[in-house]
Length: 485
Ligand SMILES: Cc1cc2nc3c(=O)[nH]c(=O)nc-3n(C[C@H](O)[C@H](O)[C@H](O)COP(=O)(O)OP(=O)(O)OC[C@H]3O[C@@H](n4cnc5c(N)ncnc54)[C@H](O)[C@@H]3O)c2cc1C
Image (cartoon, rainbow, N blue to C red; front, side, top):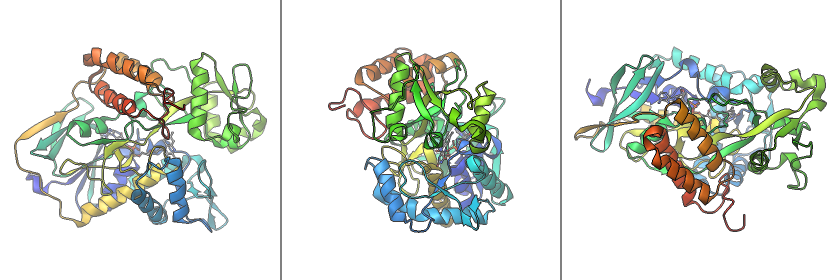
């Protein structure tokens, strides 16, 4: 097959990849993903919903303001404006696909989350929003004649020709490899939470697309900015990389209190909003207490019999682990949740490598700044995925550049033990509280045992380097050794 007539290759079956694939019609698209129908994606786990200024009196300008305040002013304003102004259209497109959002009477039910100054979060199926969204997009992709979906495969190398991309290498479940030629590749491979000991992300979210893009010569941006959710269920999972269940902030909104091991209120006197202080502040406080060897509990026993109906997902997760939250406090830990940084792109998802695009959590076009506003990331995948897909649909795809072929491959991964050590290392050095000494020590450790850590270690080094380079605290990046900390 000549590279000029190859399909658009999209890697990743979460909200971003599915959105690109749908919008690229009538271009032929080959969608490659590890799991079928969004399985294994962070998108399918999302609980909160999608932010959009669709309520009476709310405006895109207000959504922009809230996004930039959350991002500590580190955002690209033009990228934020586009996100906020396109949000209502993204919701309308989903409704046209048949996605039923939750309603009160005849109106969309709009929730509010931390950092938003208006009710602007739409949900589908309550806290099952991500699963419903992915199901609707995956069905639309299945029904679309222009998309071929190949699931059960992982991309582990990019074929480069001259200064551009010429294809990808896919491996199936048996380890057999095949080349897919493509002059245009979209990486929509999600985040990196799986590199941390405590994370809400799927185990497979270890940054393979980010690592591949960087290895191919694309530039990384804002790699140090990782958002930590303050309350995930603290499970003892020494050798299990699976996601920790989220213990939603809405519980604290409903009166739940964070307590230390002696039953003392954790946030008392630290912030006027107490338990509802900004996410990063609460995450740091919980982290510090845990680092001192204590435990942290979320006491929501006052909800009593209302638990199963008001918070069914958290209730089910607790019960699955032998905890009855109506009678006992829930053990909690902060957890790596969302990567603001990624492969640097423009608004059309272009990286600096000819023909190589990135969108969604793997990418960084500056929309989230130094900290993401809640419920803006599904929206990012929808809005920027759609934009990229439309660009691909309406423009003639550039042909692959000329020159010699060369493979950029991930190479060996860290094995199970090394990956567990890596998670522990990054959790302690690159977690909610960082300092230069620990960052340097972690870097040295990875350097000294580079062979054991493989490409995961190389990616981790780049994250550590970015955190070292930013000596001051900003947004979610907190340096305890910064002057004034
Ligand atoms: C528990 C949880 C709750 C959340 N709640 C919300 C919320 O309420 N609202 C909100 O806006 N955001 C929320 N987020 C964040 C949001 O879900 C993610 O940022 C967003 O879904 C990322 O979408 P994506 O398409 O970029 O990546 P993903 O949805 O993670 O999809 C990545 C895809 O790429 C595939 N993949 C990865 N590497 C490879 C490879 N090498 N080869 C082939 N395929 C590969 C994966 O299998 C997957 O299909 C939440 C996240 C979590 C973890």
